[in-house]
Length: 281
Image 1 (cartoon, helix red, strand yellow):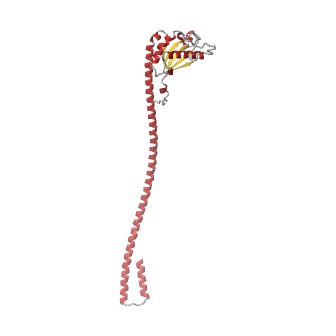
Image 2 (tube, one colour):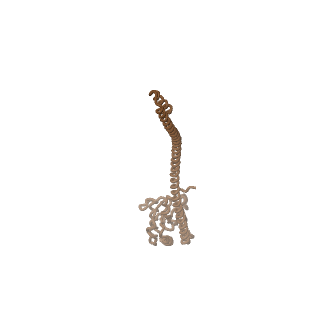
């Protein structure tokens, strides 16, 4: 297109200027050929540039497509990272829960082992009490049993007290002495002396009710035990009146069983105070 416009322009110039000499005509033609060559070269350059532009456009389009694909891949990767982070958070929470369960299980196991050891020790002490007090057991003066995890030495009141009295009988020392000796062997154990009565009411100046009577009897035994060498810090007294019967108060035999002194070896409260975790199957 440029070539054609230039040719027409030159021809018009020649035509308008009139006749020219042969030399000038030749020079014009040579200049025209030179311009044709220059224009041809320019057109080639333009064509090459146009091709390069097309290639550049294609490369740009490909790059934009690649960028879009990369951005999508990046978005997908971010989603995966977020999901993975969520999984990691959940796994960490699960790990902490499992560690907590493990710690609880270990604490539970340790406590169960302590309870097992305490039970074994209690059974050993029970066997020693039975062995030491066998003569009195065989003579019907007392019984030794394990009740609700506690060693219970049960002495009927007629061995120690007269009816309605909290004064120990003269023969009480003989009955209590072997018990005190057995108790003194276990200085790490605590004992509670419990007084119990039947349901026959009492109402005197000293004993307005069976609570006062049962408590006074328990205290009398406590004092005798300390005189016989039992450490005072290891024993206490309690009175239950008629409210913890062993048998029915409807019969004379039942009321006799209910009138009693019980010497209780208390369990190891340090172990039992440990809270056991819930045991699930």
